Figure 1 (tube, rainbow, N blue to C red):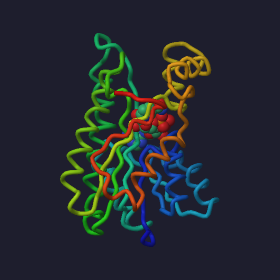
Figure 2: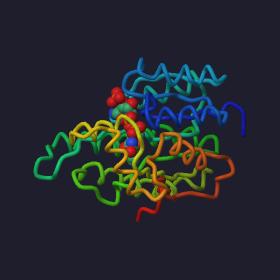
Figure 3: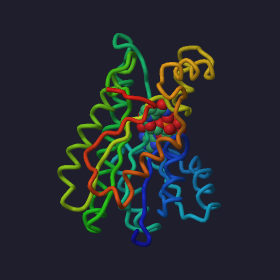
Length: 251
Ligand code: NAP
């Protein structure tokens, strides 16, 4: 790998984003840890630094164009030109259609879709200049449909179309674009779902594991590993793909 390669991971203060940031640092990247609140990024940054890596905490709302541009400018000047982008920041606002507010819809679509669009648009310049780049978008098994998630499943399906189109547009510049679609992963997001429906998280996870062929729920590191594969130098002929990482077939 060329020296000084820089990766950006959004929503990297915790969960899948934090595990991905740590994994890309182990893979040799300097990592920009972006999340809503810069202070919340401290744990991820110190884990990377204590492993001998380089990291930078950046506070930004990925759905805000000015904040995205300022964050990417800061990464480029303080860490170096970013050539890897992992669009991981996400929120859920689950509700059945008849109870879903416009705000529930807009918030979810804005963070996942607008956020990934704004980040990719701001970072592609550095990838094109370098003649090399990797974009990985976080989709979900919910893209296939999930009760109570009309907003989220629409966003996650939308990200698959976004992935395929960017793969077509950016391929000639040495940039691959792929998506990882996780199933049930034990994070604060799935904890929040358990809380909303009023069940104990351990029971919730156990019930989910019973429906998963490998008989366990996923961990953030399972997803970080799939992201690492797409980012790898040797994965340059893999583009426009959606990899379901769900402990079994999901389609
Ligand atoms: P998580 O634990 O809730 O972490 C998401 C992170 O994104 C949080 O740190 C959150 O910050 C941050 N974030 C939210 N809105 C943001 C914004 N506008 N700008 C910047 N950062 C923002 O979620 P996770 O489970 O790790 O999920 C990571 C990704 O995987 C998401 O895209 C999610 O949809 C996807 N996914 C998760 C699962 C699962 O089972 N967990 C399954 C399929 C797909 P705050 O804490 O400040 O809100």
